[in-house]
Structures are given as C-alpha cells and as structure tokens.
Length: 480
Image (cartoon, rainbow, N blue to C red; front, top):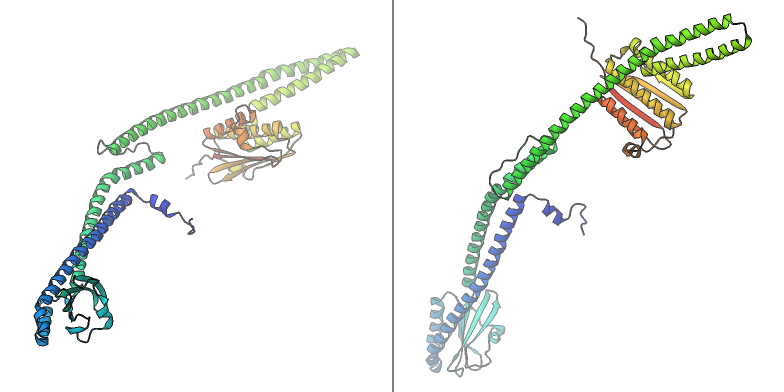
C-alpha cells in the first residue's frame, strides 16, 4: 500500500523515460553480475588460499615435529627453542609454534607469554597419531592451528598457528580489483547504453514532437524517417496519416467555406425576397385594400338602405383587419424601421408589438443606441436572432417577463435575451434531431457564426433561459 500520498514506486518507475530505463537496466545488470562474480571469486579464492595455508602449516608442523624428535629425546631445550625461532623467522605467516609433551603440557613455544589454557585445549586431535587443523579466533585475528604428532603422538605434539592476515589481504586486493572492474564495466555499459538509446530514442522524441504539433492542429509537420526499422516504419505510417488528415482537413475547410458562402447567399436572397414581398404587400396589396376601403365608404354614404349599410360596415371592418394583418406581415418580413431608423429603434417597435400580441411584459434596454456602428448584415442578423429568441419564448417558455439588452463591450455588441420561463436541459434539446427547438438553436448559432459572432445559451428546468449573442462592431474611421 502506498502511504506516501504520491504514485507507487512501480508507477513512478514505469513513468520514467526509455533512455533512463535502458541505462538503468544495463547498469543494474552489470552491477548484479559483477557483484555475483566478485562474491563467487572471493569464495573460491578463500577456499583455495585456505587449503594452501593449511597445507603449508601442515608441512611446517610436520617438519618441526621431525626435527624436534631427537631434541626432545635428548632434552636439548636450547636447540629446540632455536628451531622454533628459526621456523617463525623464515615464515611470516606463522603466528606461534608450540611443542607439547605427551600429556599436553607445553615444552617450548614462541609466544611472548605462556600459552593460555584455552589455547592449549583449543586443538586436541581425537586421534593423536594424526595431524589435525582447527580454526581459532584470537586477539590477533583468525588463526589456522595445525597440530602434527611427534613419534605418532607418543613424544608429544607440534602446533603451528598460521595467521590469515596475508590470506585476507590477498582476498581484499582481489575483491577491490573485481569491484573496480565491475565499476569500469558498468561505466562502459552505461556509455554503450546511452549511445544505443540515443540512436533509438531520438527518432521517438522527434516523433513525439511531431505528434504534439499535430495535436495543436499543425498537420504540415512530418517525422524524419532515418531507417527502415520498426521506428522508421512507424514514422512513415504516421506521416502518411498526417498527410491524409491534412488533405481531409483542407477538403473540410473548402466545404465549410463553400457552405458558409452558400448560406450567406441563401440568407441574403431570403432577406432580399422578404424585402421584395414586403414592398409588394405595402405598395400593391395595401393600396388595393385601401382603395376598396374608400370605395366601400363611398358606397356606404350613397346607399340609404339600412341592411346594405350594415353589410358595407362589416366588409369595411374585415378589410381593416386584413389591411392591419398585411402591414404586420410586411413589418415582420422586412421592418422598414431597420433600414430607416437602425437596429435599436426597430427592436423597440418589434418588442412593443410582441408584448401587445402575446401579453408578455418585455423590457428593452439599449444604453448607447447612437454609438453602435453596425454593418447592415450585422443589424439584420441581430434583429433576426432577437426575433427568433422571442418567438421561442412565446412558443415554449411560458414566461411572464422577458428582458432584452443591447450593450457595447469593447469592439463587440453584446445582445442578451433573458426570460423567467420554465427552462429546459440544454444538452437534451440541442442534441435531439427531432426537436424543433434544436433546429431553431442551430439556425441561430449558424447565423451568429456567419457574421463572425458568437452564440451562447444557458438554461435549466425551472430557472428560465438566457441567450447571449456577441457580434462585431464596424470600425468607424476617425476624421482628420
């Protein structure tokens, strides 16, 4: 379990780079193998040197035992002591030499002080007639105590203490050399691994940089293909993929531009057609109905019959309603106020008629009506967006009050339409292809995009709906 609050050790190791992984694996392998070889070498060398030390001690003990036989029998203590001193002087590995009688009591020795009872009892052969080796730990270090019988043990025993200092020194030197060799091999392995990983990782690093560029939308970047190995084939396939994506993106951009141009033409043609129909309704149909109204009035004044007069009055009322409907349709198709008085006044008139028609209280606020430099396209788009938003309020929202705000913000015109209606779940309505509201919202978003603006919608069940439209203002050149 990870109690450190961070990633587990395994996860952190997996997250390091390939270069570090390869170098770490090579270095770890070299160190493990080198340490294992060093340990095996130490073990084998210690076993070999220990056997050699024991054989050398056994040889020296037997030689002293052979030479001391006559000296013991003749009780020549001085010559015996000289023999022991010469033996120690000629072999620096000898720590001490003891000569014991048949009862195990010391006859002579080379120690600075009498041998202790523990030393005398340390190496007692089970069979006195045979040589025996025992490993002892003393204040001077580890000793190989070699006991050799004199006259098959009847005349006593010679014990030679062989020090392991030289053995340990030789093992230490060999171990240091093996460790140095391991370190050098590790450094050479790291250098070789670094070289290999550079050859392997550099194409991968370049490929990563290219993928990041592609992720940012730059499909012109290509990964260099340095070889025909797996990485080279991956880079080649990646380049083919980015080329295909670039081609698809260019085709999509062309289609998008064509669709935008076509949509602009459709909207322009629609507005022109609305303007033409509005003009015809106003100029021809309205004039015809007005003429009929005048004729009926003349007829009414010249006809004395009450029944005929009542019928003429009814016809005049119907014609008046028809004339008002024609005027309303003409204003909806293309409000003349938008061309004559500008966007704020046209919206104010439309909002007033909307409130009267649907019985909804609409508050309109435009703090800077004279400081809105708008192109005709932007004026028309914003007017239609507000018109569509209010139409949706009347059809779906069941709202009591609506507020419309036109406000300049930097180089943009911010339009906000907010109602207190029942609201809806935005994701469900905007993704349902069967929803009329989805089609209307899509059309509003497209209309805003055509003028270089932005469309945003916020709504929730029971919390009303707010429509935000941000449209660009037209730069007004300064006089001078």
